Image (cartoon, rainbow, N blue to C red; front, side, top):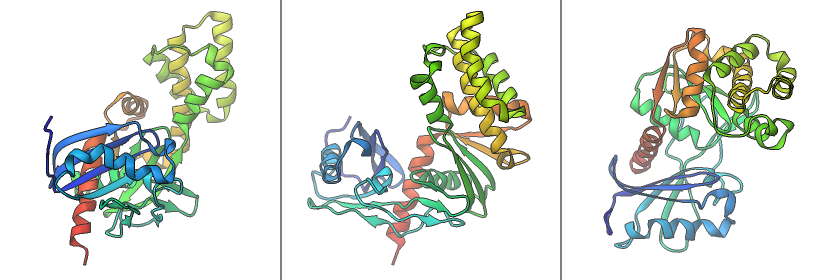
Length: 301
């Protein structure tokens, strides 16, 4: 790793739990750094020193423009970057400056909002912009798996509508703070159990609550293996999500943001429904989106 760099600009993805930064030369990554100084653990006056410390080796020769996305622009973040209402492009050149005292020039990308049904996103808009940079002219639906999975309808370079599902958070809560914690412990996985559970709730989502307790009963009466129950819990929740989001994926051109375990689980859930998916690397999309924002900022009058 190089000790001293003078990048053109610095890209930052600042989430609830982590802070990631890249030293950039145009669209090329020169270096990268990360820390656990996420938004959730910082007071408002803690953001500037957390960032300054992380990027100090890149700013030794003087201030460098910083473009940031994510929860850093939330109401609890460094400064609130106002939401933009859909339908709209995923980003524009109106980036919100962060209050600084040490000479940094930090601009934060706005999130997106939807009035009916009420919904918001922050950070994903940058990944959407990056996805469109990597796939120009693409129309269809982008699935963005995560703690709060988003389904986003894209057309003519705009976000038309979107919907958020708390599937990942529900899985974590049920796994760690419900009676099912005794049934799904461990890290194992049974893909056959996952696919069956997806099929069950996709067909009868109204039975979800009963199917969930069935996992506990199955372990007590039939000694179901934890990896089977764990995969089935995930499958039941994903299946219910797919039932609710059917208008987004049925008959649509579909891409999934991510190439890891969670993204592949969504692909495995959708494949039996005859849906083929384009898989997109998350970091690549994030950096493409941050680069697009930097270019918009430079071109702004």
